[in-house]
Amino acid sequence: MSQDKNKVDWSKGCWKDMLIDQRKYMWLNDTVAKLALWLDLKPGMTAVDVGCGLGNLGYTYWPYFGEGGRYFGVDESPELIREATEAAKEWATGGESKFVTGDAYKLPFPDDFADWVMCQTLLMHLEKPELALAEMVRVAKPGRFIMCNEPDNLSTMLAKHYWSIPELDVEEELLIKKVYLITNKGHIKLGRGDQNIGSKVPVMMKGLALTEIEARMNDKVQFLHPPYEGPLQQNLLHMIKKRVLDKSEFWMEYTREEFLAGGGNPDEYERFREISDKIKLVFKQQLEDGKYTACTSGFFYVIKGRKPK
Image (cartoon, rainbow, N blue to C red):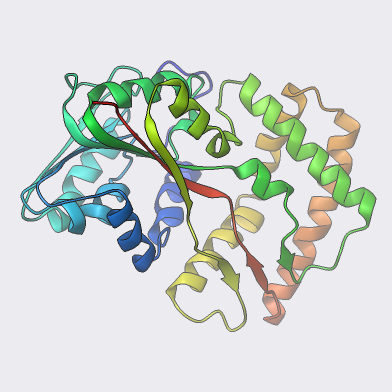
C-alpha cells in the first residue's frame, strides 16, 4: 500500500478490471466452507481485512462470521473504499461493516483488536511485506488467527500447463522461463513486490512468532473447453482475451520494463516478444475457430498462523 515505489492505482484502468474480473469466481463455495471451518470462524467475530479493495474477502466469508459480527476493510484507495462501502449494503446484513482508508504499514486499529485479521493478494505487491504482516499480528487478539491468501505466481509461470497452442521448441520454452525469472528480479528491484511471495509467507509468520502455521491451496482449476459453457468459463475466457488481445501492448511493455530492470538482455526480450506475438496469433485463430482449450491450475496459498496468547 502506501510508501511503495511505482505503485499502481487499483481504482482505474486495467488494474480495476483485474480487481473485479479475477475475484468474480475466485473461490469455489465448497472450498470456502472448508476454509471457514479450518479457520474456526464463528458468528459475532470482529474481522479486519487489509488491502480490502472492493471487499471481496468480506463478501466471501460473511456467511460464516457476519451474523452479529463486525467487518473492517482497509485500503489506501479512497475510490475503492467508497465503492466497497456502497456494495456492502447488499451483502453485509445482520452485522456491521465499515471501510476506512489506511496504510498496511500502520493500521488504524489498537493492539489486540480483532478476532481475525486477513489479507488477499496484498503482500505480493508490497516492498516490505514483513512490516505489513507484523501490523496484522499486532491488531489480532492473542490466540486468534491471521490469514494470508497469496499466490506464488512465479512458480505458476514456470510450470508446464496444458493448452491447445502447438508446442514450442525447447529453446523457445527455456527463453520464456528465463524471461519470467529475470522479470521477477526486476519486479522486486522496482519495488513492486514479489511474485514468489506465497511460498514465503509461512517463514515470515514463523519469524513473527506465530504458532500452528498451516497452509491450504485454492483448488479451482482454470478450465476452458468449447463451447465454453457456464459463467466460470465465460469469465475466464473474458479475462484471457482482455490480457492476450486487448491489453497485450500494455503488458508487453510492463514486462519489458521489469525484464530490463532485472538485468535482462534487450535482444533476448525482442526474441521473447516475437515468440509471444506468434502465440497470440495462434490463440486468436483458435478462438475464432472455437478450438481453444486449456486446463491449468495455479499456486495460490491460504496460510494461517495463530497469535500466541
